Amino acid sequence: MVYTRAMRYRAETTRYEAMEYRRCGESGLALSALSLGLWHNFGQEADSQAARAMVECAFDRGITHFDLANNYGPPPGSAEERFGRILKESLSPYRDELVISTKAGYTMWPGPYGDWGSRKYLVASLDQSLKRMGLEYVDIFYHHRPDPNTPLEGTMGALSHLVNLGKALYVGISNYKADEANRAMALLKEAGTPCILNQVRYSILDRWVEKDGLLDAMANRCGTICFSPLAQGLLSSTYLDGSIPTESRAREDHFLKQKMITPYRVQLLNELNTIARSRGQSLSQMAISWLLKDERITSVLIGARTTAQLGENIDAISHTAPFTAEEREAIDRASERWG
Image (cartoon, rainbow, N blue to C red; front, side):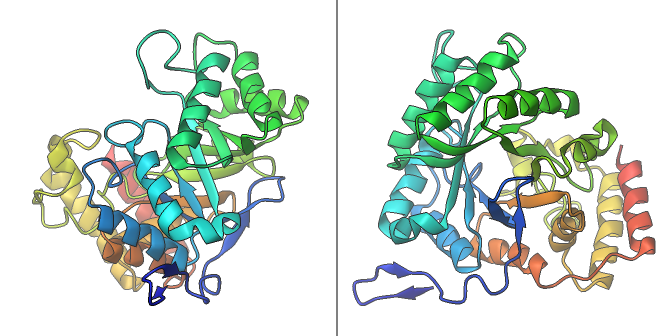
């Protein structure tokens, strides 16, 4: 990154030279093959300088898509507020080069109108998100999870309504399985607001989308973007020696539980790491490359605690090679034994 005498950020002029860009389904929108997710490490207690450095580093390396949600923090809303400050102070001259997304679907305020997928909740939530980020519109607005109690016509109608109001340019869905996604896409297409992305959890160790047939259902119709590509940090160097570092996700004992780090699973992680090393990659880089080998994947959402971690993951774009049949089979065997 480059700074002027006034210490204002100026993006690297070479930022688009190494990154790959992929189209979102049938839309004209292309996303960087890697996107920066602000789920972790951008909340109220996060280090402001570190958060800013990661966003600037990502853009300097060609990442144009920054992914948020109304409930990211903690507390909910604080990640959007922090990103809004970074955008204002660093990236505002580059707004038209950015794809900024947010979501709504989880609990944000008390009562029956602060959760799920009603039009009242989605419209109010996006208004709040725009205020927190200081934006007139987001590029992509997602419904964050299916709502069992609201007709899908109502939820998809709300997304289309927000595009018509100019508060979002595109819409997407998140955590939708194949049958739900098919119905949602049909409704949005009928409304004249095609769904461009389905955001799902997918990694070497978490293969539910394959069993669900989701990738085939989305192919050539809607893009697929993957979150948790490193399985909450399992597919990194963090746990290879069997220990649980103080600053690790497993230590938080939230989404990733300490009890998951068993000697047997550490052995499997080291088997995967051996494959990665033979490819000239770190385990995290191989995990990212493994997802991107599939042309049906539009983008992979990455996160990090430091710019060093972020840079290592971004290097997966340039430090890669096609997977051999033997490598694929070995990875599949380790995944099947993970359980």
